[in-house]
View 1 (cartoon, rainbow, N blue to C red):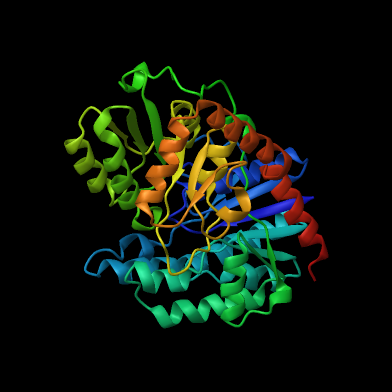
View 2 (spheres, rainbow, N blue to C red):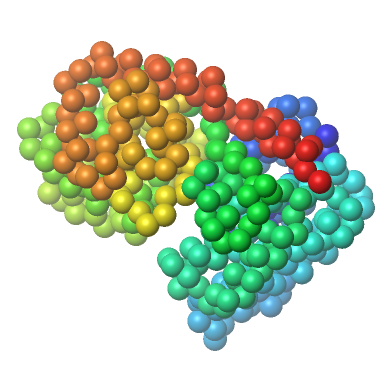
Length: 397
């Protein structure tokens, strides 16, 4: 099959370090590993990560490049997204006539509607992958300008495509609540490249962590991801405060974001017990995971938990024992006591208690990590997800 993959969001550079960029690269690789020919159209190819597949850059319109002068940031972002539709349509039409794909697969972007319209008008099958309710997120978290336009164009994008792929049941429910026909939506969660994350590591204690300046003999509790409020960094800090006093634990946080101030404050309180590393290339994440004895995903109680957490799958693939909040899809990925430990969202005391239980039981840590890695190999690889997507796309009208 020939696949034209669209990533028109300038905020998701193909070579970037964040989860969305890794998602694009890994899914494209999975399509290619299954023997399909993939051509990517992308608004940005920047970043330190290797991009080893063919890419057609989407030109950024001159007005989008220059809009920041004299215009407030939220409006500049909104207009930039809007104007990318013209670039996408022009480039896509030229590409479709030359490449003649069997499928146009698009990652939904803010204000994005041109991909589905152009593909459908020219008779090409189009599938839209929705990772988040972007119009709602924009109004809720980003002080988004042109909010009514964002919602209108989102409805247009959803109505135009042959099939919508969401990454969680919760996200599908939100789209149905917003008026999308449930029969046009399928759920395909995120996956993981197990080969990249598996490897030597001792989650029973005694890590080789000299490179990280972590004293030997401590249980290393780790977090990897963007330090945003919805990732529960405040809950993690509160939990660690109850554990740090005796010197038996060390916290390793890998990531950047606005909640880094919480990590810095915690490091001032416990200078010998906290290590903070800024965001690293995705290819480097496995090295940090192998230092961790226990990996955490301490999500707070959120109004809407529609995520498919890549970090949890990566922890599992690296055979780390995971302590995570019992929220949304996490309860489908982890079976508490078998492949991980689940605690109530936002409950710092329960999080600390689960960490302490695993600290006292190295054998349980090993068992949970091994079971998690086995579950990933059985059911959660990117090639599983790519195969599911293409099977669903074949049946889409």
